[in-house]
Image (cartoon, rainbow, N blue to C red; front, side, top):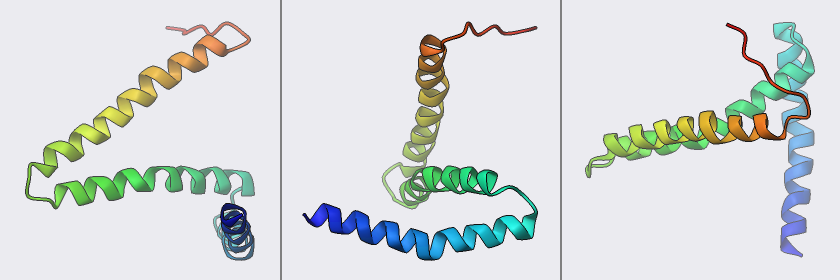
Length: 98
């Protein structure tokens, strides 16, 4: 039951504050609301990686190596695994032109 309350509160907060702010930003920058939403989603998706890298780099136990490894590992995973999965499940053949 607590999870439903948490999702309800998250949804109402996002609807009340984030949606209207995102609408104003999209009007100010003269971009579509869809592009603004996708950009916001990309920032929200990448922010834990950035915060984790900064936190790891500030530690005293070889944190810079950990931060670089985490960022490179995430990038390689997206490039290799996710793109391969998209290619495999695509209903149409994907060709690369040279």
